Image (cartoon, rainbow, N blue to C red; front, side, top):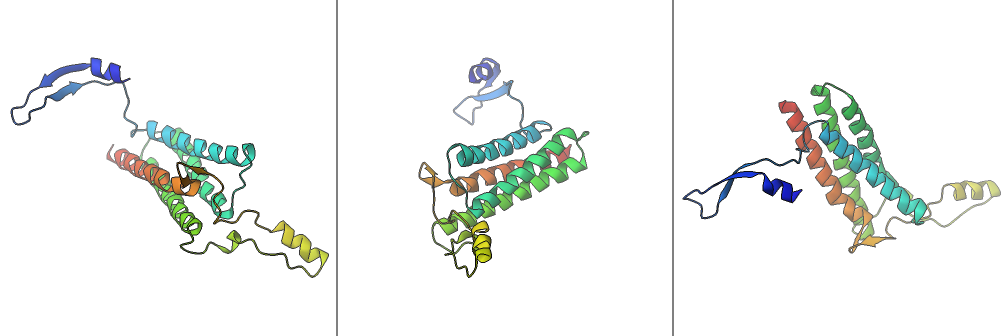
Length: 193
């Protein structure tokens, strides 16, 4: 791809105020990712791949998610649905801008959940009531059955898997922020057209 871009440079413009040559015209086969439907396809792909990664880690490798891990999947499911609607809904007009804006908000919510989960992992604050593994206190068989059905197997402050020293909650923060910024930029570009 880079060779194709470099081979299409048509002219070099030497500007006396700058010591380095400036590329005056360059035609590159790469398409701009912001216009529709490219943005919707990219957002749909990013959300689906993220969810698939989470499911493979859970069902393929046996890493059980905590409550906050499950909550962090929701924004990706929402944005996958919204991006699919955006991709299929033509012409791309005001509704596209709105839906891409909602994608940005969903990703920001996911980033917020990632920050909250990171804080729980680092013991900066306590998690939700669903994060704690409570001892069983049952007075009858029915109480024991109810307690077992509602037990949380994985506490939210225990990191089960790390990549480059960061947990999945840590990775979710910059990834969701990048997707939120991309969604917002795509919404702005769509609003201009």
